[in-house]
Length: 367
Image (tube, rainbow, N blue to C red; front, side, top):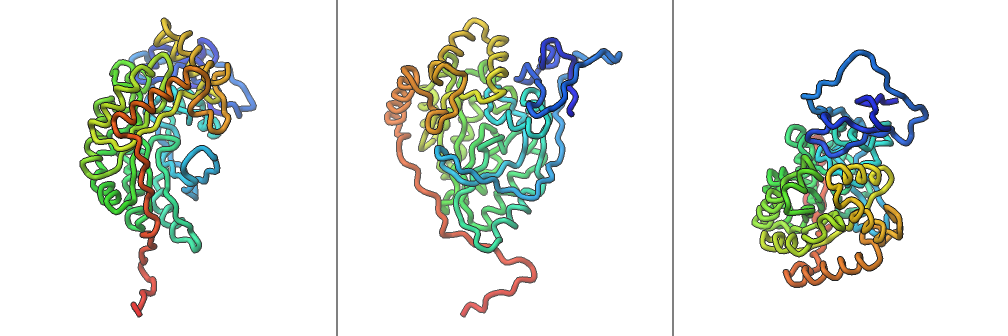
């Protein structure tokens, strides 16, 4: 069982002096723990001047492609180069996955990370298997492939090199400015009809972004990423995700205009969703950070999800229902039409796929 990082003030709470640069104010136990530990004073004091460091361990998974059968998402396979995410977005729906590792979806999720350094090798093996059927691989659907630790690990870059070598289609979702590093290879892939990128936009307000997504790229940096990718002829989707009712929903039109001005060609949105442990984490953050509007925000969230913090029903979980959900949908539809972001994306090509020869392979005689 994983021991808590700090003594509890309230169950799972993180002392204020340890939250600097992090979003989560709770570090509750994994829901799979069979035992519960209560901290006792062992004579060691936490240094209030030292924020919680980021720790990266190796994920020794022997496969890399994750399969998905959800009927309301547009992909059936994905890759996650990392588990956990240093961006620390308080609303991240992937936080509950850390419980499967015996870690907390709270502070552990943004400080206890796992890297998959064999990802590119495992991907090449998967693509070479007889009978492999080609379809776009989605990256960034769970944790962000361009989170800060990618700068040192370069796993995402290696994955892209394998995909390009195989001429395999890929879609990427990120809010990390580090994607601009890979504009060269993404440009080559996009010009061949093999790549599309979604850049997540939540707000243009630096203060809100810093509080809500403490280690993600600043809003201006994300707009710059859209511009650079568009200049490299990469189709860019402006993904307004999530739209937080009562906190960021008033920015929908401004976000879409900024994205269109930067060169985005399409747009999507997802309303805030709070599955499992994300709900108490978000409520705690909201009460600490925006106490004057916490009740309003949560009231809107519940109104959009049938009176609950979250409704997991297919085709409803990402858009909500009710008056405010309908207003948001109409506003979005009008704005994307106004800015020319309502075009249907061109399907990525599958017919270019190839398995490159390896050392020792018998070459074709070309007859």
